[in-house]
Length: 208
Ligand SMILES: N[C@@H](CCC(=O)N[C@@H](CS)C(=O)NCC(=O)O)C(=O)O
Image 1 (cartoon, rainbow, N blue to C red):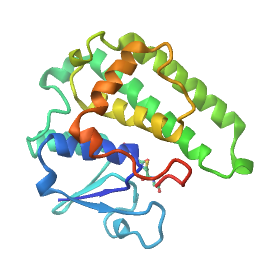
Image 2: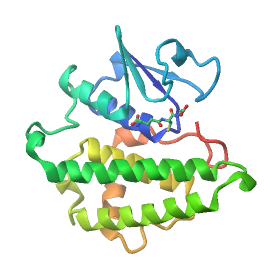
Image 3: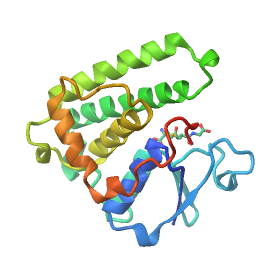
Image 4: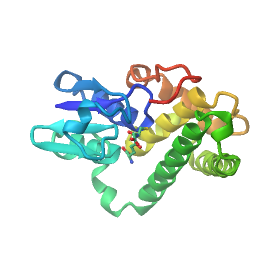
């Protein structure tokens, strides 16, 4: 299998973490691409041309969530989604907060990487407020014991999102007043899969 990634994409990081946690590293060739490059090798597979994209034989699968589900359901190697999840709407509700948080942070981070004159102050304000609301919601949902949260798609996506804040928006003191989330994040960051996928590009360079 080929997994198309960039080193700095939080979405690609979700799939990379899930692959490592599932013990699939030996079966997956990570192909690094440059987003929006007119000669990206990913264009040969996907008209969408975003990372992550998984190529497994004739299957070309985009979307981090779909790729994690493939590792669970088809490869049978991951536990990104619990088996009784079908009826667990509270779990789905939390997942939807996390993925919305990630989408907002990705927009915010991308906007900050534009030249100062091209940035939209309105967009930056909207995303800053969305992030603060999501962080407060997640602090309230976070258990006192970090180990009480399973390491699943929702939590992997949350860890990747907090990684963007730490890497791309280092002046945002998101841990202030959020001790549970801070403790959970510290525990998550220590996992080998998290350490192996830390963003590599310095924050001042354009995101990949
Ligand atoms: N919903 C998608 C989002 C993927 C995404 O937006 N990836 C970005 C990198 S962070 C990308 O490939 N952008 C390239 C482009 O838009 O051309 C997922 O969960 O995988």
